Image (cartoon, rainbow over all chains, first blue to last red; front, side, top):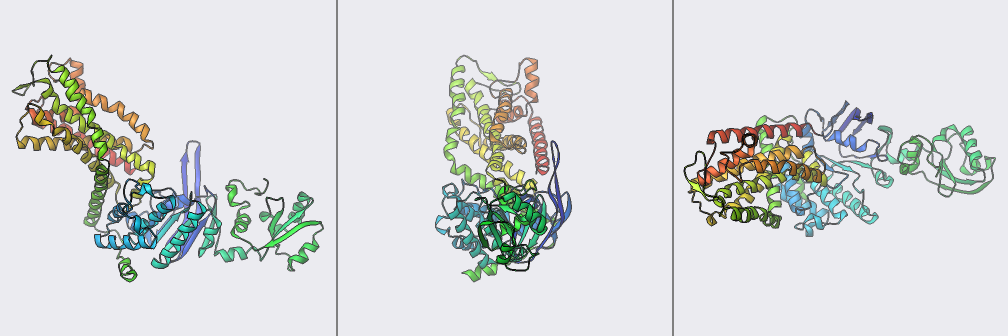
Length: 323
Length: 279
């Protein structure tokens, strides 16, 4: 469905140039739920801009449904439904008028437009508000309406750019429930960008993107497994000495060591050691004040591949824990 | 219900560039859609229509009513009959009303950018040319409706155009509306703040209005003012309107039409060109 090969996008700025996307390649299969996980400014939205022909790549190529985006921009757009990061509804029109507008712009004939709009409004739980002005809608309802709108022209690919940005936790969960429902009903390919781990966790495959580059790409399960089965969280007396010891003895995990809020150090169980975490703990020449174990999550994966947490903003390449 | 919808779901999509005729149809549909949206919004905001009715009334009844008794009959260089000032002023104020409304129609594109709606339009399978044309038509419609409200006051004045002349006046309002909306859109294409647009527009709109001959006859002007008036494209629109409604005119219909039409073509071409190059 999506074939991106070595995409590069360089912006000219006043002070020189900024590389927003630096050699990104990925292929998304038909029907797949694919995520871009990365901090703000990682190049996610720029990549989407190139997918919908709003931006032209500085170099590289991108094909959607086997069509070159630069050569066939309108044919590609006809196949894409997109939910932008920022709201893009006309709030002086009613929900229904927004859908009509969209359907007409995409050349969908009246009866099909009406049928799909009604069906999708039903699925997204908006039927009873269809003739209300959009300005009276809550943030979550606007998002759901945008998703309905993005699907009215029956796209093969749905692009969700940070679809829950700015929503409260309750609305976020609610919007996701609806996204899963509509995906089950309609079954299109989904391309998601997010910096929320739990959102990427539900996808078939995740590309972790940082500073314009994909640093890891696999299913969430495999990415987590690549860290080993456990993450250890330890509290010791002399943190720095312990950190140095880990650097010296277990180079494979140096990138992934992170300081937790309570001052503990967390890191995946080193794969140099074949024995159990218990054995590993006993082998450490430090008194352990506190120890706990948990399964790796995508945040650990992110730290492992980028040297920092998602919340840290993804700028430098130092370890992210020195708060 | 679900099954029926799913039937319609698999749309047959062309896999390569469709023939020119298909692309034209798609763009025409898009132009109509953009226009329709502006009309719906106009209808929804009809209070605003009434609000912008006030200013022309001030000109007509206070400026016109105040000056009329002191000014003798005004005639045109080419027009046969002479008229009182208020009657002379009337076509100019119809033109003003179209001019002002059309100018600020350009702000719509800036608003759309500000609230994010422009992106929805830009990712649609539609050429940028169609987007600009749709916006120009929408803005022009808005301004012609506004102008018609003033035109409807005609029975209050000593003007007796026949139906053909009124139809002519409508065509001229459309032409002025298209031209001035294009100017607004040309300015709005690159702008990101509607406040900035308003400030800029105020700089442009008043000279256009004052120089257009809406308020005074164009013969016997000091030469610098005469030259400035001739450089103002609005002059030819007001001249046409006055010609249609009163018979008074300073230029030939051909001169008026060619100047105004030529200006419209250049400005709308520039808007399309600039919009095509904007990210």
